[in-house]
Length: 355
Image (cartoon, rainbow, N blue to C red):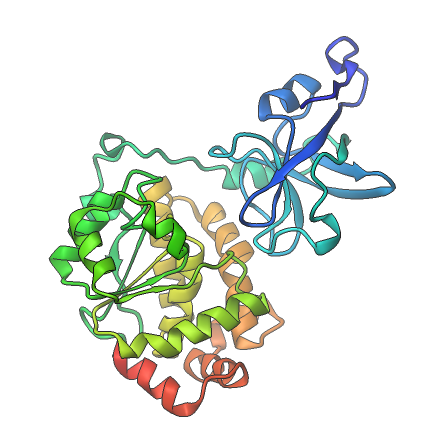
C-alpha cells in the first residue's frame, strides 16, 4: 500500500519523495514496491532520473528507467511495462541476500539528480506489442523472433532460436510452433520454464508434440551469464544436449536476453567471429523494436555494450571491452567450459551436434 507521496504536487520546488513498502519478490529476485509508475509521476519523478532508495539506514543510489538498462549486478528502479508496480533490483542478478525477505519493509524513494540518466533512457526505451498486425513488415517467423542460427561452423538446419513455443505470455507461441514444425525441430533447450509451469500451459499442437517427446531440457535461468548458478545449470544442460536429436531450439520468453547469451556461447564455440555474434544478437531488436545498426547505431552500440559484451567478456576472460573483436572465441569459450566442469569428450560431442 502507498503510504505517502510528497508535497511536490503542491510545492514545485520540493524534491520528490515517495514512501511505501516492499510488497513481494518476483521469480528473478526483484523487490516489488507498493507504488506504480503513475504514483512516481504524481510525486514528481520522471524516467531517466537518478534516485535513492532508503531502507532504514541503508541507502542506495540508482537510475529510474522503464527497462533494464544497466550492466549486470547494478542497482536500478524499474517501471517495467508488464509489471504491476515499480520494481527495485540488481540487473539480471536479483537483489543481494541482505535485501531479500523484507516484505512489508518501509521504503523511501528520493530524487538525487533530475534527468541524470535521461540519455540512456531515451536511447534504450523501447516497447513492443503482442499484436501481429502491428508488424506488417515482418514474416510470422520474425514476429515470433524465430530464426536459424548459422554463425561460425554451425551447420544448416542444426540450431534455431525463438521466443517461447510453450507459453503465450507475449502472444507468439503459435507462430513459434508453426515455425518449429516447418523446420522439423526435434529438441528444445528451454531457458525459462519449470516442470510446474510447463504443466500449466495450453500449448500449440507442435509444441505439445515436442514436450511429449521427452526432448525438452528444462534449464530455467536468470539473465545473468556471469553468475555461478547460471553457468552450473547451463553447462549441465549443454552436456545433455547432444544426447537428444537435432535440430535444436534455444528459447526463453522473448528469445532476447537468456537466449541471446546462450546462442552467443554456442556460436563462439563453433568459431563465430565477434561481428557474427553481434549481428545475430541485434536481429532480435529489429524483430521487436525495428532497430538496426544502420539507422540506430547509438541504440545498438549501447545494447551491445551494456548486455552482450558483458557476457562475452565473462566467457572469454577479457577485461578490456575493446579487445573483444580480436578474441578467438572457439578457444576462449572452450577454456571456460573446461574450467567449469565440461571435459573434452563432452565438448566434442556438443560441437559435433551443432556442426
